[in-house]
Length: 237
Image (tube, helix red, strand yellow):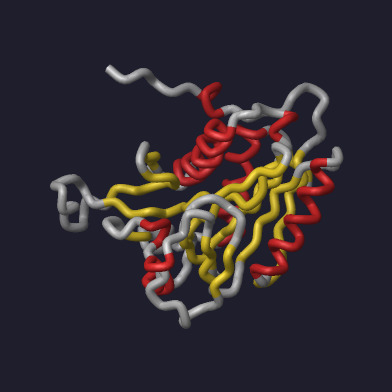
């Protein structure tokens, strides 16, 4: 029988005396290159002792290439702007209706464990989905958060079909994290067809609205913040 996971396993709570994480929500659509410039400034400040930050944004449609991206996975290179980025992972899509959370934390103030940090980000998404009665799951061989789709045809290997609802891609500099996660609330799912998302062609992509949940981005943000605080600690607006 597999061992049950505990809350402690995913905890990335700060050390005693650490200040709350700043929680910011951007207005409107933030150009991707502007977001990268902002992250660079914030990460440098955090590395020098500044307060940590979670920044929630939406982007205009864009494809981004992680450090492991395979050029053949960019199926429609002229469809949207394409940006090479320093985060881990392969190609992904960002666009309106998708909540992107840029998570800039100093792991020296928490746990200096990259795998634990990735698992903690997944846990934030899973808890967020759980509060909407959606069961998100991890996969050992696939980063991100997945949902089973029993109404769809079986996967070619005979297992139940499943779709990706959240992607992760991170980078660290001097133990300060940046980039983060994206959760599909109500993006145009056809926009994902211009790439092989995260290099995985055998599975689909879904969103909360696609699953039958017509939620508002602002409502998702409230749940996302509560889930983040349970895993990473206090935030301040």
